[in-house]
Image (tube, rainbow, N blue to C red; front, top):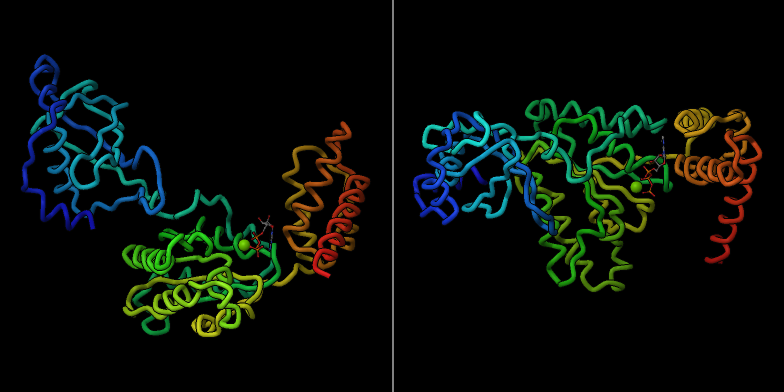
Length: 377
Ligand SMILES: Nc1ncnc2c1ncn2[C@@H]1O[C@H](COP(=O)(O)OP(=O)(O)OP(=O)(O)O)[C@@H](O)[C@H]1O
Ligand SMILES: [Mg+2]
């Protein structure tokens, strides 16, 4: 951890770089900075396995470390300072410098702002809320337990939630619910697609899986969400299709079992097809929660909420839409029906979406579904 490293290395004084030295000697006519405020902004670019978030547990120690390496630098509220020691090229933005265009001296007070949002999720910021998900009561109840656990993990003892499987029809809200959770909870949430854990070489996947769980347990309490888990945890009968599957399955089993009981890491996995999962992996889930197709009431709600967000007016009979959309998922309703109807209206230079656009969308989604069925017959 950075803080441990800082503790062990803060006394080592390294020679200043050329730019820093010249800053000390040529900027004598400038004022010394009284106080600067920094924000950790990360690397100039990203590549895989690179972490952009950092944790500072001892701010005094960080201040000394920062002052030591940037002594003599001229700063204003637009300057970027690059770390040159522990994590070379990691950038800190100067948010404010008092006075502006002053020189960092032995007496400059250095404060750092850690943006909590940066540490919150591995994905882009989630704007989804739990209340956006219609229906799926069982899954929402489980999420409630997880939220309570995260507020007071110690109190659950050996009864803590650990590994949970979400399964069911495509487009019923599995990923959406976890993104909703990301929007609500104040803990790190590591959202990954199972395929992103597969590497090019033998051993890559096992080490990526290990790194993921290690990172989560360092930041615990925390949540890992592995979407489309069937892509890596295939049932034994399919494992001969891919040479590295047993290595991946074993790595996953080790992590799902968790060596340290107190890690406070919750793993949620999602799949459309639980029967294709390796049975040992499947046995690790304490609960398998099914996501079902929305009933009439839920479809009414999904239509209503989505129609409110359409960019042009609508003249639609939602009751009729509910009847027409039996067996459709939330995704079908949004993507196949409403989006197609909207685009049809726009393409025909209309400023209102009406039932004729909806009829067109149902017709075209029927054709598409029939074509897809035909492909596998
Ligand atoms: N229960 C729901 N309530 C509201 N909107 C929904 C619901 N289910 C699906 N949707 C809509 O469909 C979109 C896709 O849903 P989502 O990606 O969560 O499905 P999924 O179950 O993860 O599907 P897959 O199994 O294919 O990964 C959502 O972004 C949302 O717009
Ligand atoms: Mg999904």
